[in-house]
Image (tube, rainbow, N blue to C red):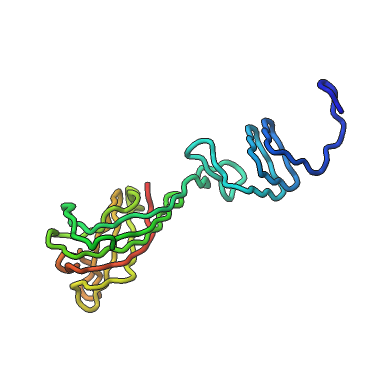
Amino acid sequence: MPYVGQTITEVFPTSISVDTATISGNTTIGGTLGVTGASTLSGTLGVTGVSTLSDNIVFGASGKGVHLGVTSATASNLQDDYEEGTWTPTLVDGSDNEATVNSGSNGGTYTKIGRMVAITGRCTTSSVSGLSSIVYVKNLPFTSLSGQAGYATLAVGQAFNLNITAGQSVELSVSPNDTKAQVRLNDHASGNTHMSPSEWSNNGYVMFSGVYVTA
């Protein structure tokens, strides 16, 4: 065995198995790296083979991620945000007065990847008597982006019990820097207009989905 101060000339075996490893220098691994224990890397690790991790990757600080599709740290290629969860849409008017909803009937899901948020939602009411003016769906899970890029349209897949006429379709319109989506009517003859509470009706129901951009 070599001792401290002696130059090591022995050839390492092709396979080394350890429970816990700390790598503090610049290390290049040209074969297959399998990590099953607790490993701490404080230098630069270059892996040219296939690496298999048996658990999740957890970064030591917030705001860190992975640079995808590039060979250097490029800000525009950094994927540092992912989140998924649920949200509860609520029907309101321009003054934020809320409609009465059937208990447990409103809900939705979201997946946020970077600045893009994909949402699904359903909103149903039992009374809109307290609403006036324009109808909105509020409580979007994230605030939309400011500026022109913040506009988005959410598609309505199902709509029931609405007081609208034949030839009209429903959509939800997201404006910049907002957590509400305006409910609008598309009419082949008269164009695009705001939906009023009377057009939604007491027992109105919509199911929608779409993608918008956050700050």
